[in-house]
Length: 348
View 1: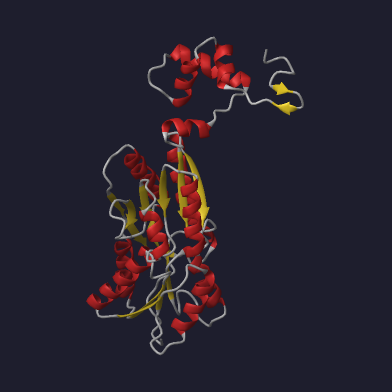
View 2: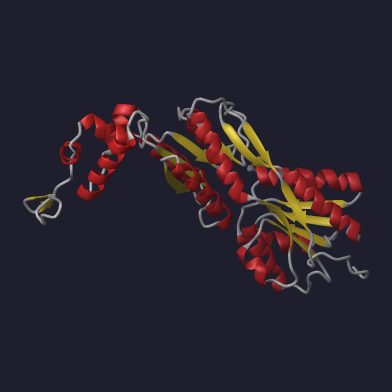
């Protein structure tokens, strides 16, 4: 029958193969086909192969909407991130999607472009699609509408490198940003730097907040001056903050860029200023940037395994979907020194 060119067609319109036709073709009951499709354990290997062969030859596509009505599960996961254009976030999403796909889930990814209103709209849309769970890396942890929508979501939630106290039932995967930044500042102080600047992202997100707090804490312990400029995770903020920091009276002799997007702005600002790295200014960046491999001198970097947090976040969500209690996991950061850091110039 599948070799017949008219098979699968009714009149001039394509015919969607029904589960009944699969059962007839395979010579089994409809309930057997249903068990194979749903992954039911009570199916023999011989039966499974027979049904899968029929599905493949007939071109059968399961009706997921009908399955979700019967089971109450859609096998879909919503993923809301701040900006898919950021390679770091794209890598996290890829790692999470790969892990979830192994368990039969499809990932619906939405990018808010750092807009809390768009973020809230994405959450409402995902609720309409009845996703089974949510992975969330919000733009603004303090946005009330976002927090309310998450608290009413009614599905397991995993926060990715975010802190939202009003969601006590949510699991979380976070980085220990303080350890990597503290190690970087210690290295700079050992080189002789006494004034250190940080161009940071939004203060309403955990990474920026943790880095700024760590900077001021270690600077106070070591008796040096610290300056932090928070703003957007964007090139424009990186450039503007760099100009502001380097034009002040107590100009930093070392600068830390708080993200790979901010780094682009820092470098663009330095290109128009009479400062050479590391002769006039030591430079550290947070996170690997694709362009860093082509830069000279080599950039000192505060590193973290972003693929790991994607996998861990997916695992935490799978645990929650299986009925396990929410929990939090903290992952390390580390500092790798390089030629972009040197002792400050004596005449500065």
